[in-house]
Image (cartoon, rainbow, N blue to C red):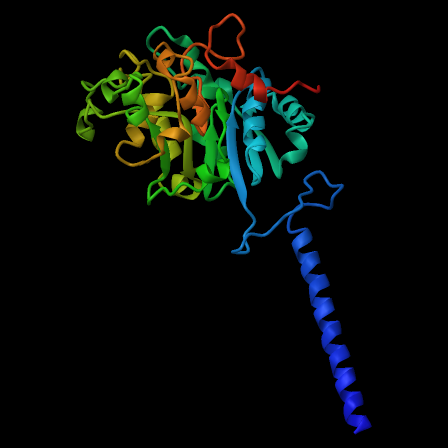
Length: 347
């Protein structure tokens, strides 16, 4: 009888020891899943989701060295409104990589909070030779406006869903929700220029005819509707894998270069720039973002119709138009929201 009791006691001790060991190992597994230790450059205390996957949002921003201090405000707004990990892929001009990396890392509200940071350059001078802007807005010829065409080439390691943002954007919602938006088999999702918000507040609703020359011999065979509603390419979600598979970069470059030889786009009322090739390539081949995920026009004349309560409810606001909130002499609306996220430089 005593022997039997002894075996029961020993067995219970072994079971309790194994349970304790399992708990310890499980805690270690959940502590660090990626990155270096807590003193490393890309240290990250990771928490697994219910499905075992770490939530990481891949954010793309393309701008030159002069505008990167402005882009910090956009990045700060993203970080302040999400608990998701953010991997920032920053594209800049040749010669500005070290500066761009420095100001991002040295900003306390940004650098330490990023999961990872990748900074690469694009040859803006080579790109400039492929661009022709017709009309009065010569600022649209800035090569960095076209850098978005080459996201998957510059960042060859990029796979799956990513979010692209212009640097005149403030994100007030959780960007994880934007990154998770279903593309429904398409390559990308954009915010339509013709939606319930544009209708209600009488915002300017751009059509394809405002961007593209429908008399061009290369445009006619595409059977595009001149009255089709356009979208704004300053905010979009895309699948990098499908982008490559569909040769999107090559298609965009084709139309951009053709426009230097023929009048394909840019002489119409809405202007040229990097927008028309995106409209052509993604015609009826994109998903539509919910209206509150791209409230645009804050820097335009019709943006005067946008009420404060809509801006407060918006998940993402965009100062499209000439008036920018960081330019003191310009009368851009809702500067207080921009200033809320503006960060000082620590150079």
